[in-house]
View 1 (tube, helix red, strand yellow):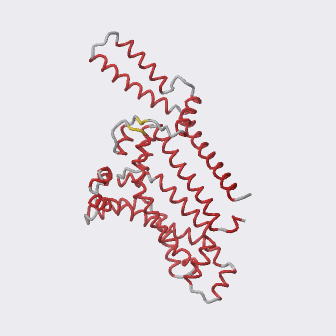
View 2 (tube, rainbow, N blue to C red; view 1 turned 120 degrees about the vertical axis):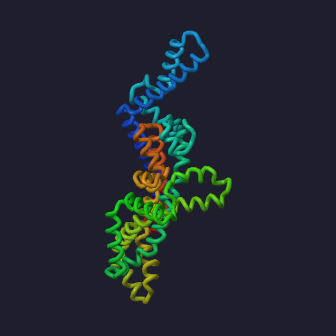
View 3 (cartoon, rainbow, N blue to C red; view 1 turned 45 degrees about the horizontal axis):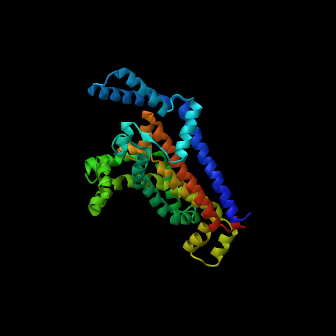
Length: 355
């Protein structure tokens, strides 16, 4: 098989995986009756508003008009259909990017948009905030760990190696949200060098282009503590994972030959060790970055940071099935795209795959 054929097959398999995830999520929501409960609440709210409007206009035979309007809403929301049909409608709408509208004020409040709002707007307004807080922090971890990880593995047993292992063990045991609370108390309330209310990020981003320079400074003021917290918490894991993936390559014959040639430790680590371990390192890096898009529910809640994690929490607790399905679709789509990018990178960095 040629490279093109392999990539096409991978793309088809990943697309099928995306569809399966959307179908399963939709079936769970409809089978549990979650969507019926929400839609009934929405219909009752709209019917009461419609009835008040008719009464204010002194329309004759209000009850008949209200009942007719209620029947129309039941058909519009598909409550006259069995659960399986409603699930298929959900799948069709999601896969055609018709994410619908959210009727929940809580999810709109997280996004900072007027209620009600299109689900796509709610998600794509919220997404950049998680990228600012978490994805950028993960990129910083990658920028530090990827060059230094091979050196640490190459010098196994050194003081630096022992320090990294200890650091990873300590901060893997400390919850990110607990560290976040400590930093908020120290930087916000004691030292007063950081904000105590991070929800102001909404106003900064919503008005960013009105005064880009001033708002960029405000953005840094809001984001630097959350980014530092995430970097401190996850840097040890990045070091440890890169070290573990590179460790098996260190004892290979070609590494011993490179050292016998008199190459420096940095040259051996970067040109030989990291290159051989690159497929595994790329997999860990890209999937970690893709996974960060989903946000951290508890950590974002501690910072009151209106990102994807808090949006997930609001959608689950309020039963906002439209936003929940949209979130599952977007995060799964990001993962699928990341997997396909990996398939392309494997071909570029590993000659064995091309053969």
